Length: 387
Ligand SMILES: *Cc1c(COP(=O)(O)O)cnc(C)c1O
Image (cartoon, rainbow, N blue to C red; front, side, top):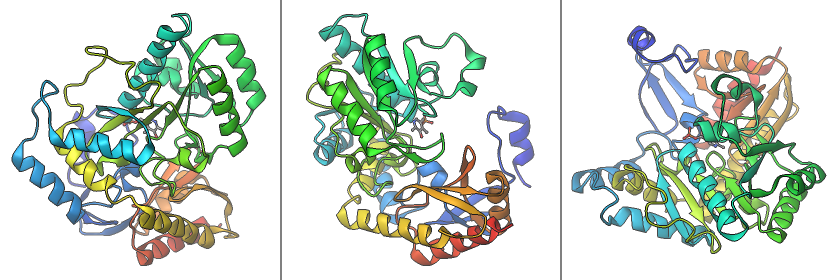
């Protein structure tokens, strides 16, 4: 190992890193310091939408980098305006706030829901309902939103005003909503970190209908599932609902840090001057990268994402040591008989990078991973899953 030790000495130990030092790559193939190649089924956790060192993305980012890298939100920049327009045209949403991460996108979404409720119903309507096993980020507020107890213990007190309800239980949701004076309900249509689980359509529709009737803001967290990963531009589009607020990040910038909070007709003017802000938010280089990503997420690519997802499912269904395959499109969970972490380590030895999500192996390959690389990697995974 070349820089593992320096990292271990000087970088905070917040990550359980694998002993892998990646230095370069192209598309879905990564190279480590020794020159060993890996097929990447993780995309830097759903971030490198078109793999690494993608030519189109590099050209877009370079071009903007050479013009101007940052100018602050006191002035207008073209990439920011254009990206916002593009996201609205793709979704029917009306306005966008840009931040730098998923957690920040969710912070914005929560602020919008709370201010809307305060303006329209009264300040006592501040509670946000989220789902058990959800993941919404690492800030004190988005940790409070995250419906997993293990994240809550160490940093009390978290931001108050969050309650959790089991996924796919509409009665429990309605009972809770009647009890707590909610400002909003926030959910991932396909839960990611919590175990790659697509919510039941009846539940998602039921929540959206109840929320609309009662003017509770529907916030959909598309940080992981968004930007083409599910086979639709945003995963909620698979469910036929119209959220009031959508948050996204990860794959949006194709590898540069950018998050976005999209607001609908009801919520687009909730935030006014100085209600919210971010120094780096809407950074022109990040926005230029994001434009190059979003402009490629079209019907043809979405058909490809679905087809490639089916390739994975076909190889793994009925495979020895595989209990079931979950998720949607190129957001795939694999319940293995062996512990997921052992499968991930076994794959790494054989030159394939995949992820875990709780007790599942998680696959989030680049949206354009070539078929031959995908088939080769998933067959290696299949071998590793065998007892
Ligand atoms: C990763 C993730 C977040 C947090 O994003 P960061 O960019 O790490 O802050 C929030 N919600 C979901 C669904 C995620 O997968």
